[in-house]
Length: 207
Image (tube, rainbow, N blue to C red; front, side, top):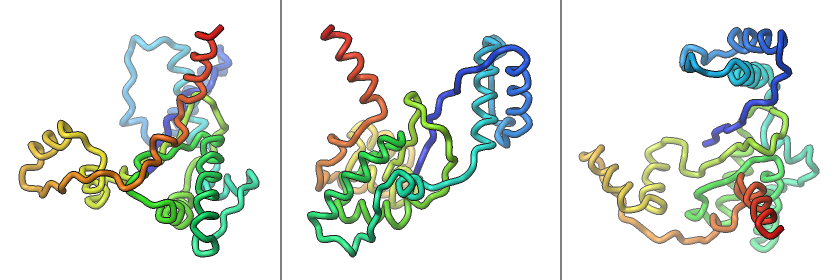
């Protein structure tokens, strides 16, 4: 359910760039699926391969562990009443945003359902322990696993009519779930990866 959108780190240039590029090519298991234009500037290519090498060599962790290391307590869902659980959920959401981890498409879940899913499954998935970068983000899409269940949830609550029509045309034999209003209104208030950039732009306009 997660996707890493990390951008490349700054390159040091010169011989180190060449070494990083080669190291990235040797370490990356996905090179055969990577395409790069022959017109790509050498510094951009070096930056890319440097980021590949950094990703491949990064240690493993979980978002659960990262939150704990940041001082966020994560009690079991059953240990909290509804009021305390909602407060804890938003504490976790804000703490994840500071770690550049962002949630999406959560409005079909109650606060308790969402916190339980995070606590039991999503926060415990193994991820690469990459340095924090304000230009990168890790997205957790609550309907993005590709499973039949998640696809039905997406079509039921989130897909617009045009998307539903295209899906029905592409899969004529599949049953289309009835469109239903989302039972909760949370996504509108979730932190977004570009919030800081948008705030900076708004500050510049004021100045």
